[in-house]
Image (cartoon, rainbow, N blue to C red; front, side, top):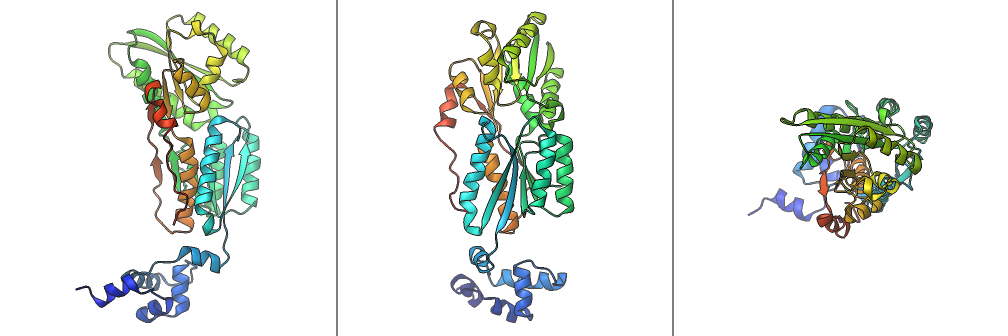
Length: 369
């Protein structure tokens, strides 16, 4: 037969007054502990929390939010909304907002140009001036990203990082790919069926790859894999092409590389823009090449299905945006522990399994309690 206390915790709403009486403190002290307002001695706080646990008290977050008319403001600093990759991240942020707005959550989104560290710095000041309760950021620019994270740390603003992991960042959490392993996987895919002597190209179609930590880590993993292969001599070329929208210039540069390295056997495009390379080239230049792309954006999917891209590594940008906001809500409102490193699975997608990723969408909770 259950004890009286156990029955009470299941069937009777535990009031602040009940907790205060059992703990031998005032209702004001219990209220400060519940809402984490400070001004409570550590030993007293620990005692009250123990009593709350024994009595089965569960805080009604929604009622508390409404009662105190509290709005929790999150600032999201991400990149161009019209880019197919960043559009998915923005969609994930929107879905998380829909699932948490009953807690009084709002998200202010700041869009940056991927080629402008200066714009990123200016937006950092705008974000901080807006006094957010939490920040979601993709710190593509390593130096500027580190400076931003340090400022948030000094101001005690929790930060959820997506897309680009920053070494030794004092942030709430990182959600996204293991960029080093992404490079290793891409190299392994290219290595299948490759001759003993060949050249492979690591192609960055990005406006500022030398200052993008995730691209630096991908290249390191890519090169390390080929260094460790026995019985083969694989030359790794690295090309940073910043004017990726200039398809004529991209085509001329690629043909120059092909002329200089006629044994070119494979290409790894390190971000979501593999489709731009294929758009710039005629079929005869790529028919004998293995191409590994990144991210399941629509133009990449079309090239995968037409056999112009052989493999796509999927890091699920929509889930990154969604989980970035959810982790901040878990920390700020639900007072839950948040894992500091949250690597998402790196899916290897080919033409034969592509529809499983595009037709069967991940189901995101519409409401988070």
